[in-house]
Image (cartoon, rainbow, N blue to C red; front, side, top):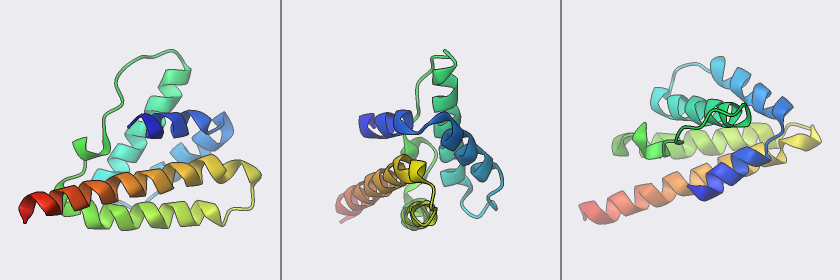
Length: 115
């Protein structure tokens, strides 16, 4: 979780605002993932404004049965920003890459518990 916090902090204000705007306009195909992403982006924005409250982990919003789709969506979101030509998108790409890795690890952990 610490890595996600550090990666959020690395996103500059302009790109954080762009991320929040993008999330506001996404279709609601994966509402749990989208809800957590909105929480994380707004948490970072609030943190920068001096509001202190805990960042919830992704699994607070995403159920185990939604993990495969959330992993895939995280990868797709990272890829969409990766193709952006602006130089300041690399922290967002790194954030989505780490989120995908975290969700994948959680999915593998859940699979190990079930078997």
